[in-house]
Amino acid sequence: MQEYKALHEAILSGDAATARAVTEKALAASADPLRLVNDLMVPAMDEVGRRFECNEYFVPELLISARAMKAALELIRPILIARGDEPAGRVAIGTVKGDLHDIGKNLVAAMLEGGGFEVIDLGVNVSPEQFVKAVREGKANVVAMSALLTTTMPAMKTTIEALKQAGLREKVKVLIGGAPITQKYAEEIGADGYSDNAPAAVSLAKKQLAVGA
Amino acid sequence: MKPLLVRLLQDGPVITDGAWGTELQARGLAIGDFPDVWNLSHPDRVAEVARAYVEAGSQLILTNTFGANRIRMADHGAPEQVAEINRRGVQLSIQAAENRASVFASIGPTGKLLMVGEVTLDEVRAAFIEQAEALARGGAQGLVIETMSDLDEAKAALDAAKRTGLPVVVCMVFDAGKEKDRTMTGATPEQVASELTGAGADVIGANCGLGIEGYVPVCRRLRAATDLPIWIKANAGLPTLVGGNVVYQTTPDQFASHVPALIEAGASFIGGCCGTNPTFIRAVREVRGRLTSAEALIVHPTRGEPEHPAT
Image (cartoon, rainbow over all chains, first blue to last red; front, side, top):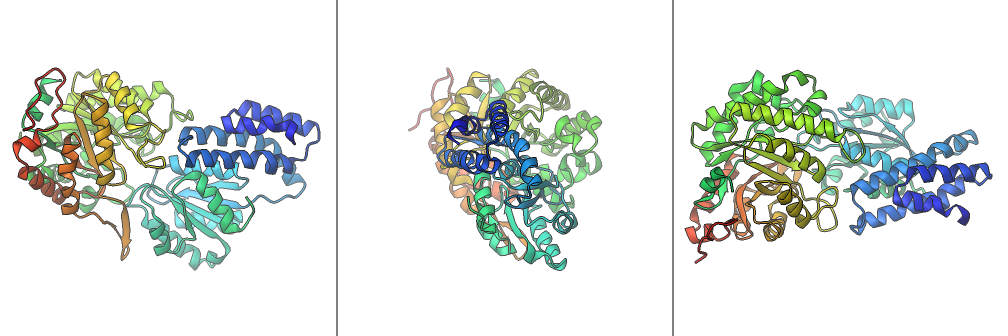
């Protein structure tokens, strides 16, 4: 895999064109797509997360790295699907009912995709019923909710209750985040986890589903 | 410094207002509804909020126009009402102030990210020009660009606001990075101060964020990096859920207890953001009132004027 090290570098520097070109070349040379993901791309995104933790990277860098990752994954995913490989998990993500803020939600969605998850993006102002439907029909095993407003965060609790009533609560891990959200709030409403930043949301989702990083 | 700012600051730090959205919700605005539209549909209740702040001791109040730019309003329908909502918003605050407080108009972010191309710089600039012009026509005495996370968007708004000739305040949110002292895009207080001062802001500062304690060092760093007056409007800490209700843990007295430290760190305009209300402003006003004039004038921005004695 070392010959494709440029893919790792391209993701780190957020160079989507190079990420795509190297991936094309590797696939044409019959490189194993899963190894491209596990040996090069996932470690690159882990390094992006580490740099974020160390104040070397900020949101703009996360976004361009996630975009480079996505460019490569768009070529790889169809092959993985065709041969029956399952994604790390299926995440139904959305900003809760009454809240129209999508910057944080989009960032977490991009990082989750970069982390190998299939992401069902429900958008903003998502009702509890829409989350329930995504779990039931979209087969999501993670529900990720975002809220920026203190006035809309109670909708997270309502959504968890709706999942319970639909008999789906045990089938999914519920992760929450957003400016006013805290770990304590997550515990109070019975969510499975909380993250205060996007890279940590990916490790949290993996930990919750017990899939290897 | 613009004459209005000199006049406002001659007696020391100025007390501004607190949060608007939650105050409107307390008066019946439904959760998730767009507060700015109430300038047209419920003008009496918007004026009530403005009046409550003036009566609590705000010397400078803002307007219910935070989200009234064309880009954000497109998500809520009614982009054609942008000008009218802004103009009315200023008029409502002016009427409520009855000359007891100055009225600076609020300009918030578009909610879209320039850095990933969700909007272009031209679109952002055009939206802010439209809003700033409407606010100026409504009679605003100054413009406050607030809750900005991206310096490029803040500078586009500043550029638009300056065309009106009004004094312009620009404040950003510092809540990112390991020490929670950076903007979302990674800018430090020093970078923010240097860029906004260079771009021609009249006042710079910080608002929203994680609580008032964290903004004392941010204020000190802004102060050290610019000659401009500093504007600070912090949150009442982070909210928690108590019995199904969202509650901010910082009490008005706790909030106000940080005011002397903020003044010492160089703040010239002090108020509150999320979680604060007229009771907080009253507490801030009381603490401010107990300071001697020497304490209050300790940190005055000077820019070419003689420094106030700190004795």
